[in-house]
Image (spheres, rainbow, N blue to C red):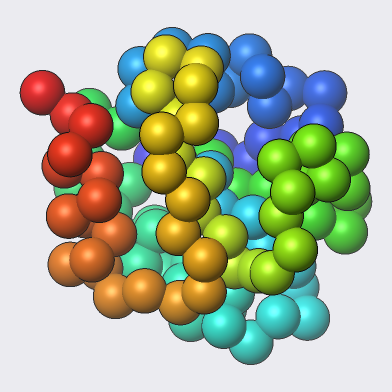
Length: 103
């Protein structure tokens, strides 16, 4: 399941376990390609929490993590950033990255 997160809820939404946050914007073509990949993985990987954050509506979190390009997928484990994927990546690549951090 994919959940919308905001500047106000991000820290709480990503504090426990393995989380992937998709930083995106409505005008971003590559983001529209990445979104279905993230949605598919969210249905298949029950051991990861999946979030989406619209950078236009939530600029503070993107700024805090130095996100300059979108889409950016930020992977956290127990509240700490463990990986960052910038640009479009196919499902197999994203799953490979996430598998490194799940038990």
